[in-house]
Length: 253
Ligand SMILES: [Zn+2]
Image (cartoon, rainbow, N blue to C red; front, side, top):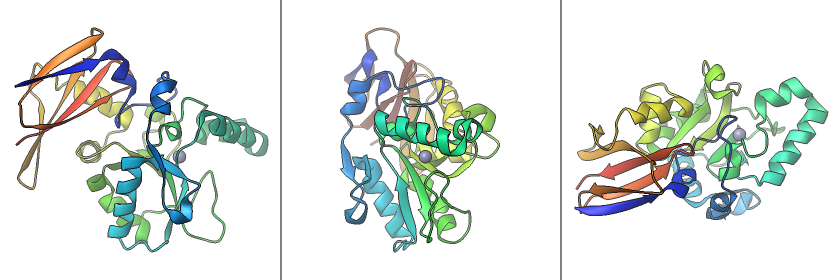
């Protein structure tokens, strides 16, 4: 066995952090420590968190994208988010802006884990790019969860996410979480409490994929440092939920 120490301040860090109206970004030093890289040579003005960028590129290659899909927006600084929000208020009014654009510190785009995708057409709408459910966009959707991505603001989830249905906005949460979220038709808002039913002390959530065994469970951040014991040889991944605890993924050996 090995002992893993989880620090309370790391609750605000990781691929499963929930950032929304109710749970804004509170720790800017964590945000500043995210490794951001340019998406690719043609889009070097758009930055993404490094793993998000790598997996998005792999996913697009796997569907033979050849520039038929473009990255419209990725990482945004707090200042950029503020500018977009204020410009939209002037151009589109309050009702539209509140429906589609998050306030500064309430936008996932500030984490580098969120992407807006658009079909590569002549005039791409920056706020609401066209990204359908058929053709190349449909191909992207069918494979997205395998690469760790989810459609973040789904249809029918508006009351829970507080954001209108956004077919173009995807979020990297990592596999197998993307798959669990999709299979159970959950929003990220629903996944956070869902996973709490699989506590460290109790039964973990088992996932089987191509002969691999994965376990997912929740650890509450009750004290400044929470220690857990894990099997020595398993690979482990930990993410805070940006609220009160950690989601641990164990890749069993
Ligand atoms: Zn977006």
